[in-house]
Length: 165
Image (cartoon, rainbow, N blue to C red; front, side):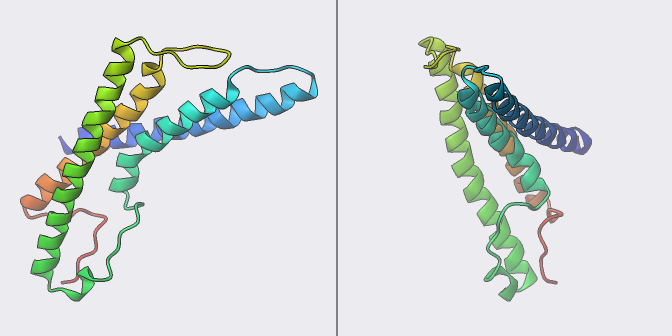
C-alpha cells in the first residue's frame, strides 16, 4: 500500500510539472506567433487553467517531500512526547480543513457539469474540465494527509518532520 500511495503522490507531482512545461510552451508559442502576426486564441485562459491544475496536483507531492512551510518554533521546545501529540493534533485539524475544502471543490465540479457551465472567451469549453484537476489534486492531498494521520496514530513519524528526541 505504501508503494501505491508514494507512486500516486509522485505521479501527481509529475503531472503538475508537465502542466508547467505546457504553460511555458503555450506562452512561448504565443510570443513567437506574434512575431509572425499569428494570434493563438485563449492562451491566457488555458495557461490559467494549467496553473491551477499544477498548483493543486503538486500539493500532495510537495507535502510528502517536506516542501510546505512549517512553523516549528514552538514544537522544538517541547519534549518528544508532546511534539508527537502536537504534530498529530495539527495534522488532524489540517486534514479536517482540507477535507472541507475538497468537498466543496468536488461539489463545484459537479455543479459546473450539472449546469453545463461554459468558459468565456474565444474558445468556450465546459468549466468542469479545467476544474477537475483541481478537485483531483485536492483529493490526492487529502489522501496524503490521511496517510500521515494514520501513520502518526500508529506511532511512526512522517519522514519530513524532524522531532527532537
